Image 1 (tube, rainbow, N blue to C red):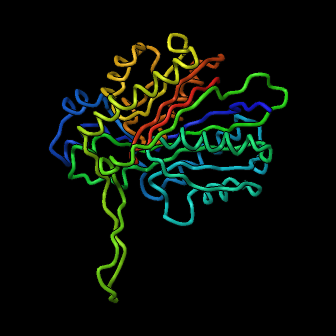
Image 2 (image 1 turned 90 degrees about the vertical axis):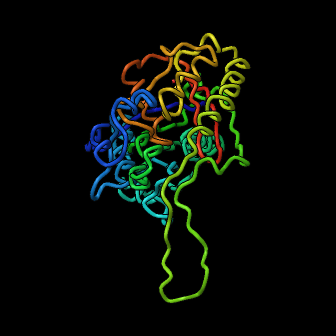
Image 3 (image 1 turned 90 degrees about the horizontal axis):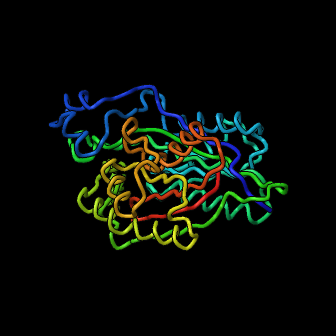
Length: 323
C-alpha cells in the first residue's frame, strides 16, 4: 500500500498587525524587528476566532481540494500548543464542526515540531491498513499566550493554520514518505515554555487555576536551532543521497535569520527554502504546513521536500517527502 498527499491548505485570520502597531504598545520599532527577525507583519485571531476556528477553515479547504466528504475521514490529528481548552481536545471540536462523524480525533503537543510529529503519527496509523484517509492539521493562536510587555517574544509570533490529507492508494506506485528522523533534547526543556499551571499551595475556597504566558530564551533557542538541528538535516539528506538533489526545504518559520543561518550551515541555497515568516511571523507548528500549501500553489509539479521542525521540548524532527 502506498500513501499520497491528497491535498494541502492553509488559513490565517483577517486581522493584520504590523511592526508599527506593536511599537505603540512596547519599546520596539519596525527597523529593529525586521533586522533581527525578518518579520514585517503577522495575523491575530480576534473575538470569537480561536484555534479550532482556524483549523476548521483548513479542514474544509482540504476536503474541497481532495474531493473527499467529511465522513470519509478516518483520523484527525491536530498539532497545537494553543488549544481552545485543555480538554476536550481541540481536534474533537474540529471533527464536530466538519461533520467527520467516522473519524477518531486527538491533539498532539510537540510545539514547533508538531506538524512533522503529527504527520509521522498519521503515517504510522495508515500503515496499519485500518485507515484510508487521515487529516493532519497544525493550528495556533499564539497571540492569546503572549505577554505584550515582553518585546523579546511578542514581536515574533502570529496565528495561522495549515494541513494535509494523506490517503491510502493501492494504485499509486510512489509513496509520499521517503524518510524521517525525530528527536527530543529533554534536558533543555526550560528554554521554551508556555501555559504552566501551578499546583495548589493550600486547600481553600478561592483556589482558581491560572497559567503563565509564553517564554523563550532567545539566545539559547538560536543556538539550538542553528547548532543542533542542522546536523540532523544533513544526515537525513545524505543517507538518501538527496543533499544536492532535494528540490525544496521547509523549515519551522521561527525567524528569517535562523533560516538563513541554517541555509548557510547545511550548504543549501536560500532559493530552495520556502518562507512565510516575513508576512505571518512565527506561527509555531502551523508554519511548515502553511509553507507547504503555499509551495503547492506555486509549484504543483512532483518534487522532493525536506521539512524540519524544532521547538519546545526540545523536540525536533525532519521528514523527507515527495509531493
